Length: 241
Image 1: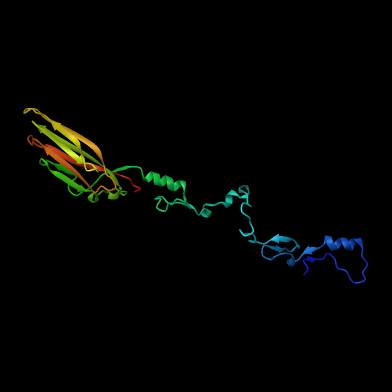
Image 2 (image 1 turned 90 degrees about the horizontal axis):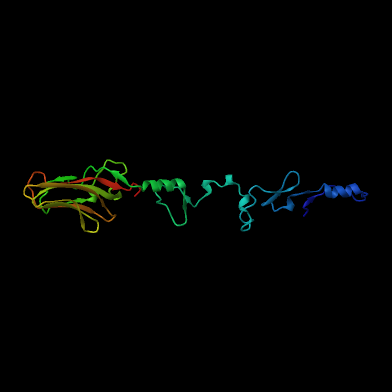
C-alpha cells in the first residue's frame, strides 16, 4: 500500500535522467495511507498534519506539557472545577478552594451586628418586680425588624437594670449560659433617711445551645416609688450564621 505520491512516473523502456530521478524524490507528496487518519492526516499540499482534535490525553505522557507552555488566557474560571463561589460556604469541602469574593462576603457576614428587638416572651421592659421574682424569656420568641435577624443568629443580649433602695439591699441579676447569674446593678444603704440608686448595663452571652434568658429581682426595700427596672436593649447577632 503506497504511502507516497511519486514526484514523477516512469514508463517501460524510458531513459533515466538525473532530473527525473531528482523529481521522483523532490516532488513526492504523502497520501492518506501515510497517516492513521485519526491523530494525523494529509493536507492539500500533501503534507502530514495533526488533525483538529487529534491529540488528547491518550497521546500525552504525564508531565509532557510544561506550565510555561500554557497560555494564561486559556485558564479560565469556568475550567477550575475545584473552586467554589459560595458566600455562605455551605458547599465548602476539604478538597475545594473558595474565591476571594466569597471569602470576603463570608467573613463580612460573620461580623457582629447590633439589632433592636421588638418583642419577646414578655415585655422587654419590666418595672417594680416583687422580691424573689424571676422573669424568663425564650430566645426563640424574640423579634426584630432588622432584615438580617433570626433568633438562631443571636450571640448576645444587651441588658440594663436600675434599682432604688433605702435601709436595705436591692439588686437585679441576669442569667448566664452556664446556669449561674451575674449582678447588673446593686444598691445598698443602712440609713433610714438616705436613699440611693444604681444603674448598670452589660452584654450577656448567648450560646448556640442557650434556650432561655432570665432576670431575677432581690428587693429588700420597696419604699420610695419605682424601685427596680430591667430592660433588654437589643441583641448582638452574627448575620452569617
